[in-house]
Length: 275
Image 1 (cartoon, one colour):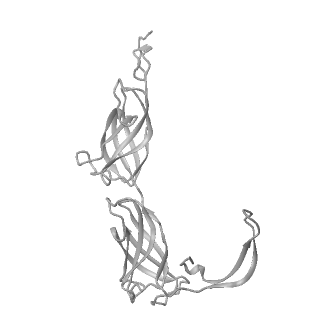
Image 2 (cartoon, one colour):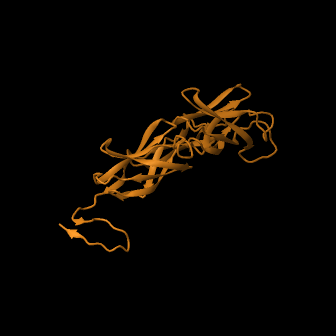
Image 3 (cartoon, helix red, strand yellow):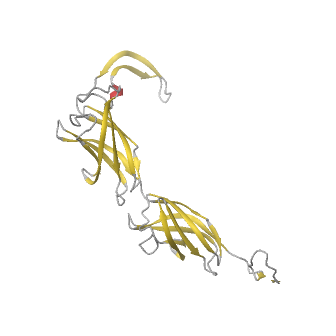
């Protein structure tokens, strides 16, 4: 299969491997094959090639022979990303296009085009790979590049602080990507978060306060008798309607009962008993 990009046009030599597994090639003959620029519309790249739900992106698309409308500065075609031949589609808008040699005077399709536009990924867009499709007005159909773009799945990156003592109350910050934390203020369906061991045992919950971008802010009170050890952090994602987990994200530190009392305030004078 000959790649569709304009950069692959030209004359090609024939090479032969000098030995099995050597990775060394010698020229057998020159100019044995010619690749000419296709006259069919095509797409060969999009940048960036991934994004998060809720994100607004400026995109550049490379291709050729695409009829995007009579004015290169205001294309009347659009583009979209879709799965499985058109499902879960979301659309973008084109701003302008240029020949690859940046000839600013043309408005007719050329064999090599750089196309620019923007797109907004819906907050609840399913994650996964998407085909890129650009509408061509000559063939009156979509021109497709398969699996060109990925909508990133929700994930949790970290929690700060990542440890606390039994009986301690902490203000925490949780970082994630592609997370839909729900409403901005407490009481308006903010995402719950919780800590557990071994797929759900020894569970305790935090209290969400507010969210901003990729961050969820809240408080957590660690019970006095909470078993010590590492805990998984789970945060509810409203986009996918499921718990998103980061393994071993938080540690509960068990306080020894060797000294009574086993806590105090800075500057305080205490009488203690050692057992």
